[in-house]
Length: 96
Image (cartoon, rainbow, N blue to C red; front, top):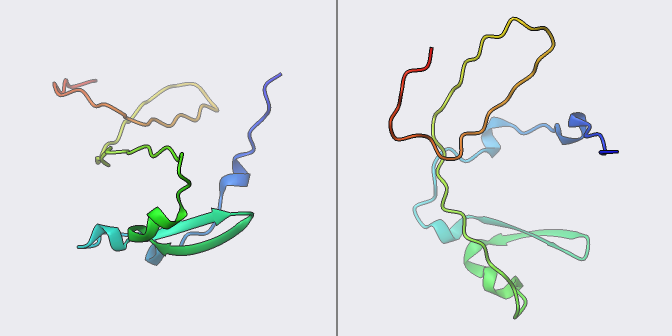
């Protein structure tokens, strides 16, 4: 049996003023959250080397955020659908 996910556990208040609108001029000055031993602290990304263990694995994510909206009309009740576009097609065909 699959465990049920309660989406309400993922809801939280995030004021607009806490969401970065533009990247910093010096990207390595961006905020770094450190979670160690059930303790949360903050630093800047420039200091990340001080928090890595010798055998650490670093995964780089070079994805970009794009403005995308998918509108779907379906005449069935009680359907909730969300889409995440990972690799949009370069040939932007019109879908009706």
